[in-house]
Amino acid sequence: QVQLVESGGRLVPAGGSLRLSCAASGSSFSSYFMGWFRQAPGKEREFVAAVRWSTSNTYYADSVKGRFTISRDNAKNTVYLQMNSLQPEDTAVYYCAARKYYSNAYHLRHEYPYWGQGTQVTVSS
Image (cartoon, rainbow, N blue to C red):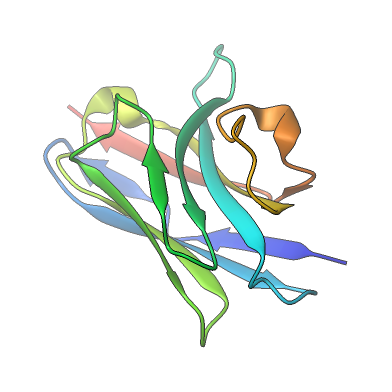
């Protein structure tokens, strides 16, 4: 069974940086597609970024393009989300998600059958 465990969330001042990690286990992830989503209080869960494990092709929401970077480490079976120039509107619970194989609907949450428990990121103004 695929398991995803996020870590790295904390309180950070506006303009600061943070790196989130998602440790994946329970499968061979070479053909997987990994995503990060976030959910702010009272809002829908939204797509942030995704990476194709086999090719390292990356995909971003417009709101984070140029500020966030998604990457993966094969040896550690871990996906990272480097977040720079954080703003209060980035405050949310951040979730790691996984699906087998690429989908051109990668920005839709229902495309991902596997989810982590989430990690809280709070950006103070």
